[in-house]
Length: 283
Image (cartoon, rainbow, N blue to C red; front, side):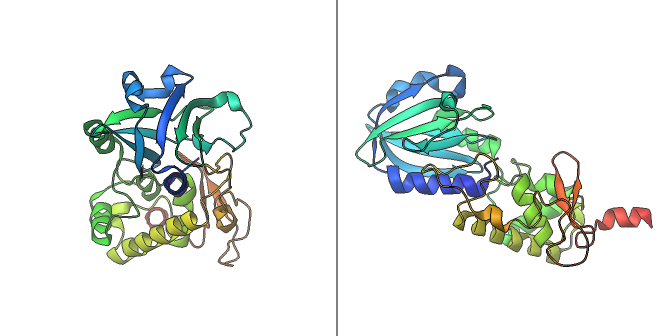
């Protein structure tokens, strides 16, 4: 479930509580939880954490040691969490990695992932560059308006799957795609390449607003998401359509929110989010 806002909240907390810490040891409970680089694990012992970055829905910890820089990249996947030691978990058997630190108040960071859709990767700089190029498109928080317009005008296909295509736009998942499209009054099945420039600008501004508001609220704790310190994200209280099937439209248009079943569930107002392509076909 964690998407860009949740990953950014995780990165912010790790920067606040762990930057400058020395990694004393790293316990790996399952070898298959490390996607690549497991033989380099001994190098990280004694290294100092000097940076934390977010790429899409992943969080990268940058370690420095003897003039070398290496990374631990954690994919949050659908159920992955990075948690401090004091944060309680329902099923501690799903803690697959423990990193112990000195020099800071938080002495341990754990990687908890019951469904194991996400993995850790241990990478040098060249490996991180390849990892980013292979997995991530533009970042929706830093992409310029003009670049976003060009991207949309050049892509064919339905709008919502495009927003969620990680190699095109990194970090948006089902929750925030639904919220953005409703606020921008766009149907999930609209053709991206047929949008007018003014409509793309409206979507861009809405995307920025939704993501930044969600980060400020600590993300959305819909199911299993917790920040490293155990706090829940409160943006779920601001969801207008996600999970609201059968509720009145927040725009007070008199219609009910419907659920469309496609690759992932879409929640739409049939009055406020008209699919113009489909309407032309009907006419």
